[in-house]
Length: 320
Image 1: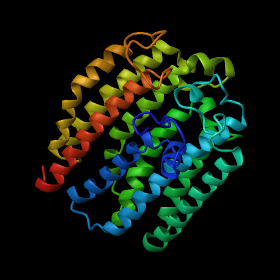
Image 2: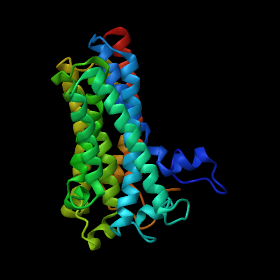
Image 3: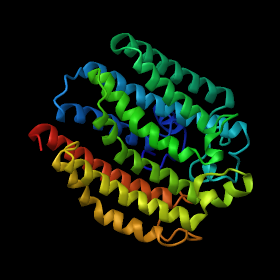
Image 4: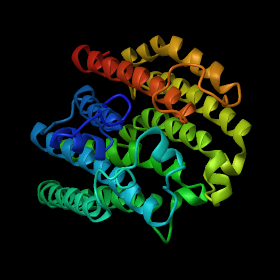
């Protein structure tokens, strides 16, 4: 379940049900963002409060859970999620599959958002009003991603939203909570990994063009067309590597960050697949079909993100 977000067969125990409802398989992307913030603070020699770091890290993971719950709730409300839509095909939709009622899903989203609010209040008392900006910025963008009236995803703004949320808001906000400062260099350092996270959404929206275009959901891939969207996503992978090297040269990131080059074998295969249209049938065993490009991007993000964290660990310990 953690690899695919698909629930195990049979009756779900409370823990498994919660992991399924919150799509725990994608939460590691947020844990990596928190790790990047903490390791950057150590590498830069900042005065770190690990207690507040832990609270902030828990806060952004809960915020990601809340986002996933709200997405399922609002997409169902506006009629996007239905039995033949990819959301219900790669993993059963929690309401459509009967795992939980619409009211139950709303209650879960409200409860998690209440926890996020409590964390915001605590961190604001400890670190000051900038915490409110980070927290409310993340909440408003996450809610507006699918919720009426803005529905950012519907107007080609969902992909930039992910770049901002997983970059300056998550990494920058966690760094600020841990240190009480937010240097411009940290904001810059937050973008490479956020760019990888955005490739996952680009891939997902390419996969869903056949459903989104007739529905009038104008994601960037729908606006651009599949071929252009595939090229843009390939360019994003390249920019990730170029930005890591540039930030190492600028001494914003430790030299060990270049360990991300070890993800090259995975990237090479993914790059080759992105050079071709989405196949009609998955050429490999694929438990999340009809997602194809999204899964490929996730593999690159997981491998390169892990190596990036390893490089930051080495930089934090050895200073290079």
